Image (cartoon, rainbow, N blue to C red; front, side, top):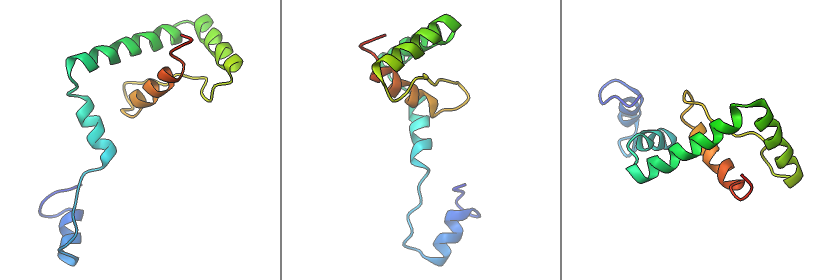
Length: 102
């Protein structure tokens, strides 16, 4: 943690005052993603609906895997979970990779 008095950055600055502390870059992205502009949030919601429609049916999932194998794409699974905040970025990357075919 980055507390001002007792945590790691304070202890490190006691040893070396020139150290600059910051939060994890990935954590900053997750915090920024919670306050997205409405246009970007709408696009993200549409992408989530597309992924959920593919994942909601076993038949759709099999067709998607078959499509990925025919196209010999790197990823054959669209990842999205609300628990893991990194998964939205992974999902968007993989969806964009296949957007011409979906």
